[in-house]
Length: 112
Length: 110
Image (tube, rainbow over all chains, first blue to last red; front, side):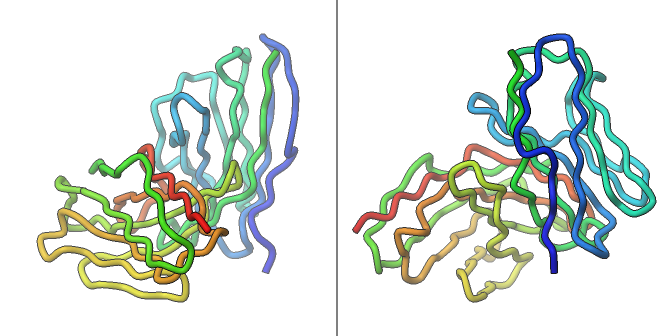
């Protein structure tokens, strides 16, 4: 079966802009979670969506938001981009948050 | 959330068993021990998980102490492709929230 698909894989933005990243989970998976990875902070949990509802949230400012659609696809948005938002953004899906999480290859964001 | 402690780095000779330790002394009764690895900026890959009993799959074995305060991931015959950062994580069973530590960088050498 197809894995977790994230788009775009790479993107470059400038400070102050906003960005939207997309994640298509594995078919049948209803839980989607997002992570940010930077060299300094490592892998950090952003938020988790389950059945279109945010179920968990990490310690990130309100500029980071997300949503989930009825087909379980998820998007995350970062507004008013800062240089420190440059990171690899990873999406993971699981069957209702149970068992293993399957990660996508990530979207690498560079903010100039 | 329970936190884990892992050595920052380890070396292993190719073909030998790699034993990666993890301390999780504050683990709660409903939290599982999960192991993931990440190979150079790819998405983390699931390896194995367990609650109380030792577990084995085609990739590795997981040994959890009786008091559940520590565990060891065993790669029975390490290959160069096993060079990666290995993360030990504790999590409740019904959440997609994982708290990653700094992990252990395993270098498998020929």
